[in-house]
Image 1: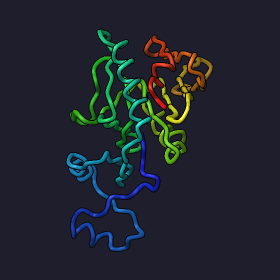
Image 2: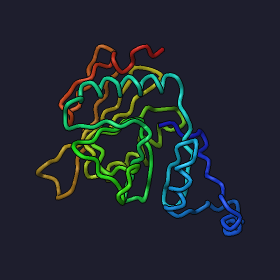
Image 3: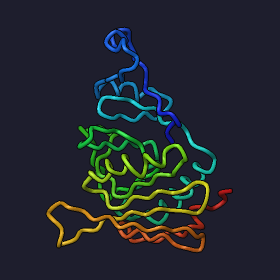
Image 4: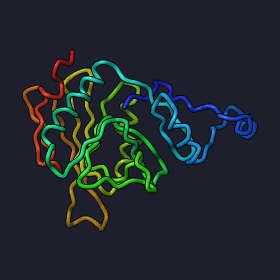
Length: 216
C-alpha cells in the first residue's frame, strides 16, 4: 500500500475539534466512531492508529498492474476452495494496536471474521500482500509488519517490489521448542522471473512471471 511520502495527518473536521487542538503541533485525536464516519466518505484510504488518522495515497501504474496480476492469478487458483481473496478496499483491524489499515491484497481461510459486526473491518487475514514504494517500504517492513504479526490468523506476508522482480516472503512457523504463543517467522527472497513463489498456507505456487506480467 502506498502512503504519502510525508504521511499527512487529517485536519480537524469541526470547529469544536479545532478548538480542542488549537496547538497545531499536537496530533489531532479522533474517536474510532469519528474515524469510521470520515472513512466512509473519504476519497482516499485512511489509516487509523491509536486515535490518529493518516492519508494513504494512490499508487503507480506498476503498483496497480502487479496488484491486479496477483489478484487475478490467485483468485483463479483459489476459486472453489475455502479461501477468499480481497482487494485493497477491505480494511484490516488490528485489535492489539487499535489500528485500522489497508493492504494491497489479502486472503482469508473460511468465513470472514469482522470487527464489531461490521462488514468493512476484517480480523482474520491468513495472507497479507503489500506492494512496496520507496516512501513506505521502511514502514511496511517495520512498524506495519510488527502490528500485522499480532494477528493470530496471519501465516504469510508478502512484500513485492514494483521496480524489479523482487519479493520478500515471510511465513510463520510453529516450533515445539518455543514458549507458548511464541512464533518464528521464516524469511525467503525470490528475485528472478524464472522462479516460483510457494505459499504453504494456501498450498499453491505462483510464478513470478505471472506477478510481473506486462510490468515495465
